[in-house]
Length: 218
Image 1: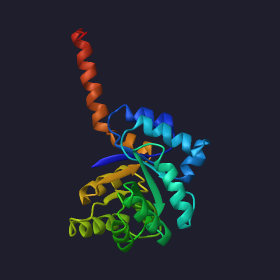
Image 2 (image 1 turned 90 degrees about the vertical axis):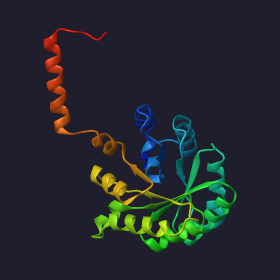
Image 3 (image 1 turned 30 degrees about the vertical axis):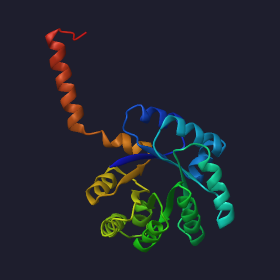
């Protein structure tokens, strides 16, 4: 499974990329707005930090403008994945960009039918929003399982299932169990994954016992 971080905070990305655990980054207009910077500058800088796919979202809703924006974003760096919404215009944009060899992440997916359309349009990634479905009383993880099962029936589909709107570490565990190819999560969730009280307790015991020996490895 690939881990993407969902943020436009460049310092957070630098810190987490240094661990070797980050395979890519996803951004959206909300995250870019929080950064307070120009989208083109932010995306270019992130692409230079993480060599994997960096999702940069278009801001338009019509085909012609989405296509123009997508091409401009894709020209920034080879590892840009243009992010488009799961609308008819977005799918058309996806198909055009994909035919040109551009990676596309189709976002705001809330049904298996929508995911099938994204795969048909040649998307590199489709992003089902787990947490937002949970918020309205639906099982977001059930959707992940459905899409993975459907895609497995069709080897010609090259679209990866990117579990998005991740709220906590158990979402990551469930997505992995169901076979999602990628999970994108806020930096805080990735940091939470390493935490366990028994790890802390065991480490404290080891360190206390080591100090008693009076030794030094260096």
